[in-house]
Image (cartoon, rainbow, N blue to C red):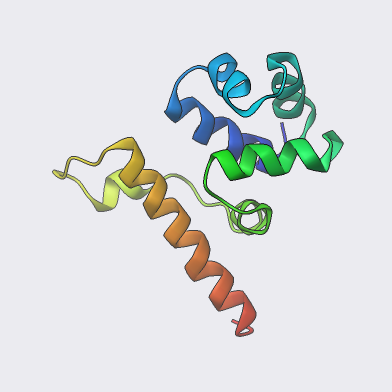
Length: 107
């Protein structure tokens, strides 16, 4: 599985069932599974966009997250705090945004 597929898998799994997610966004569950197992690069761009939109991220943010992927450390930095899945996803989107700004500034 490529890094982009790993990221999408983790975000989708936090939401619940992959089958329900696929049905919610209007693609066959087998298509979603193929995208996650064979790699995002082999999927149609339309399906990649549908998945990203449903996860409230852009394709560019997905690419940036994959390029800069680091081990999951949110829980370690926020020990003792109770974060919802939605809050953790928002933190991940914010991290991707900060990384993209850093990259645009040449850092």
